[in-house]
Image 1 (cartoon, rainbow, N blue to C red):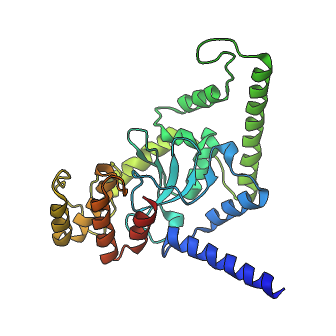
Image 2: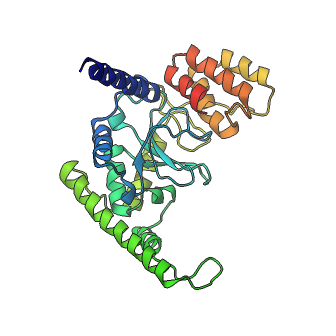
Image 3: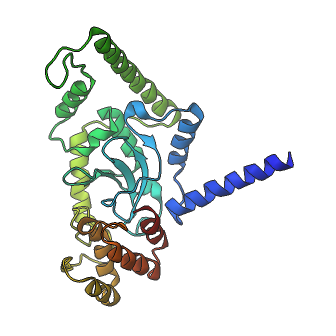
Length: 301
């Protein structure tokens, strides 16, 4: 019994340390914990809605002030809380962004908070669809219908075996049934309901965000900083590494935040590419109190 208690304590500490690493000083939202618990207890992800809860999603394009919480399993697409470098105090109220490394733009603002993110996914049917922009809800419905269709020919136009076609149809039917099941779970157990007029919702969200940001960034998302709107000249990212160090040493906090955000757009922050810049950023982040961001950059990029 004593040995079992020790193992439980060690596991608890491991989970706590893991959360501290990914979330820093932020508390994991209650809703996110419930989603994770459902996923773990049921032994399945939320895959019928196109996502699964996982925190270790970091790509060179992922903004340093984004805390990932879910992925789609395709093309590195993941979703995260946008913290605006600590401006957001409660992740339950943090905007949600979609990071899609192979798309243009690779970062999109998609929901006002986690609750709305789930409501949008319920409506569109597949989380991955948030990777695109839509002009109407009819366009979204058409995409879901196309997603569920079964082709009876291969990519060369050759007919597929009937058994293979039937298997695909069965899987599609299971997925549709799964969506209905998870929609019921989210409404009854989580009090999450579909958001109508998705395209209008996202457009309005981005218009409001544009008015609220005080620092413009290359990703178009911007940063909500505590001052009035600032005009900060863009940094010449083609300069020598030693000039980057000099810039960071002399820059104001607002200038540094813009540099941190834009850096993931202009560099490949890994040991195999822009290693020197990566190390300079880690040093600057930790020096100025952005411990979580510095640790994530050091270990996960």
